[in-house]
Image (cartoon, rainbow, N blue to C red):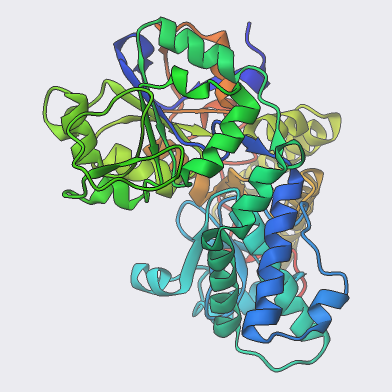
Length: 477
């Protein structure tokens, strides 16, 4: 039996036997990085803030550094307040942090006009999703910068700070300096992937076409793939696409492919009429890929294609929504959170919350339908406060201020909702595929309310009662 770390979880029915083409993203999919990479990204972006945007030089001298225990994936930054927010599946703000201090419930309600969320149009203007694993450094730098300004009584505009940091992160990525440092030190920045070659060879031997599709330049992915697969890594692929420009790769309709000279890294100007193994291509679009790969049927019925990536909105949403591909997400958080959930402390918290919520139901049943007395309300208030404290205890076990990637307090998070909506499968790593036949059939669990890895756990503490929003956080006003 496959252990929980190596399990692949299904949101829908998927028959691998019917899939003839599998595409893979690169970053955090085929290769995984050490913590040193996010530290480097943080430091280089901080340096840009100080040197290019004239932020206080003291920020470089006071010991600011990336904190791996602060942020998680699936957060969002409110560009008007600078708050880092964890959103529920209904887009409500479950938890918010201003710098390194939690925002009180009263401030959240005041900022969002008596509720925990924004209208769809306001969300589009104000909230910037932080969905991929690179964004954890981005999130930490925003919080640290705002905390530095607050601690030193420096007047600042949160919107300007967020804009500057997003720009510094972007410039760090596109400058090439960051990628050159990583490519030049693979032992320091890349984690080993011992099962990757086995997985790819098994899929290849079963007759499936393998497509490599990355937003990174060839020289960068070549360094990483040589480190994890060896010098002949390209022999495994039917098509290699670099600098794809996702998600535009999915939305453009007339962008042709261009061939990359692997010796000089220059892009050829000749027209590409055929995609060949052993060659490298750049730019292009999905419509052109479909034409050159000679996939049959209309574009929105390519259900014989599986695409595996880590970034929901850069890799998977458009592939699923616009073209009907089967999609699989790499979510390394699953393995870590399952370990925590199996600990004695977490089981105790989970059972206690379920007991308290059941007590709340029974107490109200005994109270009947008459108007509650002050003492009745006090009993309920105190029980709800206990629930909140035990929820905090659960959160603390995960070792970060926001809690589970998949839960925003007691509700499914927006990340979990998107994962269920746009991904047919999800897994701890691509290496999980080594435990499954290329003809394996995945069946979803029958309970549609929860993600697959949560189904067999107690649901009382999560789904069967929705406490009032004003008692979901015990943050003092």
